Amino acid sequence: MKVLTYRVKTLAPVVLSRVSGDANLTATFEYIPGSSILGVFATRYALLTKGERGGAADLHLDEKFQRWFLGGDLSFGNAYLLARGEYREHPLVPTPLSIQTVRRGERFYNLLVGEEPDQKTVTVGVFCAFVDDRLIVEAPEKELNFHHARTDRFRGRSTSGELFSYEALSAGQTFTGEIIGEKEELKRFRDFIGSAFTAWLGRSRSAQYGRVEIELLELGQVDPIQKWSSADLSSWECVLHFTSPAIFYNEFGFHDVSLPVIKQYLARALGTADFTLEKGFARTETIESYVAVWKLKRPADRALAAGSVFRLTFPSPIHAELQERLEMLTFTGIGERRLEGFGRVALDTAVHGQYTRHHLRKPQLNKPKGEIPEEAATIFRAIIENHLVTAVQERAFFSAEEWWKGSLRKLPNSLLSRLRIMLKQSPDRCAFRSELGLLKSTAEAHLRGYGTSRRNLYDALAGESQDQWEGFFRQIETKVGKLVELLGLDLKNDEGLKDRLFQAYWLAFLENTLILNRREAQKRDGKSGTE
Image 1: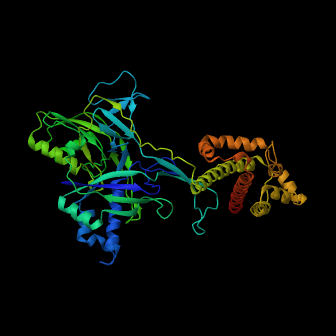
Image 2: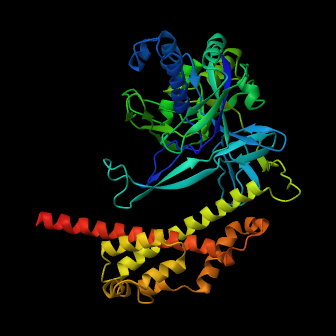
Image 3: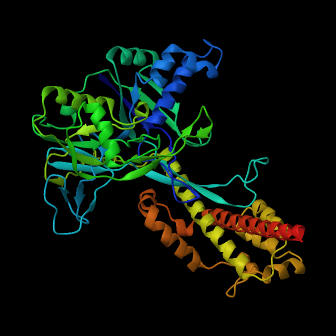
């Protein structure tokens, strides 16, 4: 067996959806599952062989496709974050659950080998790398993006203002994983697929998500024992570390992660049941994935979580044949759906009783000398302004809902639409206020009758206070203050910026008020229709 290492660089945020308890949140994995990697390479194969067969529906009849993606000749492992220090790269693996620490501690305790400390311990970060008796703990960067729910599929837009959020792996990160198979098969696979290509991964690939760059490194042999640690397989025991989720089925075909079932799988792999599963640390998780060919989700499986560890104890020292089977286990894995990277294991990854935290030294970035180039300054100013616009729109969204709920009289939609047109056509806020003063008395009365106990909408549109602007900019400066200072910007006295923020705030306010009015009208129409 050989190993072909691949790397995935995220060129855009990537959403790899997983089971989440929040109906309005699509959560993402913190790694790239092997099933997704298999899908990317299968899609690449389909593109490269387009025109050589009847169509995508006949791919399963292709002998090469059958071997690589269906028959199990190749196994596509998960891709985990590649942590970069100042001089070295460190491939991460799921942290063994036996390694724990006291809260905010810099020392880690391997409870499977050493003694438990007197204080209460908690699990360490999800991913780690071992450097002798030091432990690197890192996690991929993620981001949260909000979108309007497309409630009207015919119109292709939101009509009720509902929001949902996507959690995504941030762009600019590199993940690494392994494809396992026979040497000649891996060589043919790499030659056919190519050493590097751009692909799309995960959800919402037609929008802003999913663009990645995939690179296949040179084929090489990796001894899994040496790769993970200097495990001594001449002893009477070893520690099994699951580096990916593992799925097991019982005799009735149902998923089952009980110890007796796990031992049955191990006995078949090792050729003997003469061993005991002693002290271990384990969790379970639900595995659910989407199969693009089916256009359906695969039935959920309950799996042993990555990071679970067990100590295997044998009645006598590990002999040569058993050692060979243990080594092979690190290649073949254990359990079901190993083609997709499930059931990967390593031996004796954590051999010390205690570890100290090793902080990666990030590459030092030196500030360039001289003035900021004008093009760069223009880009930074645009970034700051976009940040400010987003901030005022968020405020407007919540203020509109608060005012709408606190007002007994609602504003006519016609008046709201007219105010929006006035805002868009006015060159600045002074011109808008001049137009506001020309409104008929009926419209003015509507605006004065709408608002909270502290203020009505007409006064809010017609006047402003310097204190409000200063308070707003003071809050913003905590986030972009250094960049503002570096560019020499004077936000508080930039009247043009204030005009644009004024327009963005009130347009968002009026738009959300319109949405709330329409939603209320729909409720009334629904009630009258049922009476």
